[in-house]
Length: 250
Image (cartoon, rainbow, N blue to C red; front, side):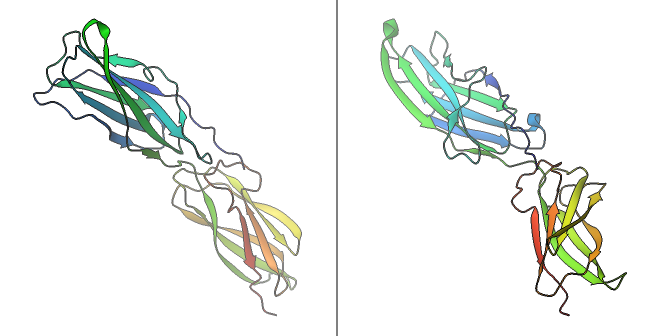
């Protein structure tokens, strides 16, 4: 059961500086977070603002994008065009302050993203007057892959005396559609011929797969394997082994 490759391409698009009548606060904000099935749908917009302080001639601002990709537990800095570079106010500093917006698109999923924004104030002759750093809220990009799960099991004797017919419900609880895949069954530790779900499963839908196989002994366990050939890149594959108690009591 293979996993989808994480999309790593990131494009930065910067908006121009904005002057305001009142001094903007010293702040870094997540102003928009969009998700979707396609890379172009997954964007985050961050805005930094800094007020002018006494003696300021130029103001600089820098956005560093950080990502947390499961199963990792630590953020890492993303390198991409337009990120990690100093954006500068005009040579004639706006009277109120400096506001800059950084838009990042083609975010990988699953993942969580935030921006670390650094600020610098410069005075005459390029003298550094002050520095500051702020971190935005996070933009979460949910996993867009399918997620196959087993549902209810139905069974009845036949068609032969030593056989039974088993019907298992299979759901796709993920956000992406699943293409065709096989479902396997083991009865009494013996693998049976796999059954193929030729139409796959669209996100949020359910279908059934039917086996005619040996009748299980009471008290034993039936073992189903969803996507037994590993054709579907899933959000979670730990639930593809589906165990069900034998439904027969005699």
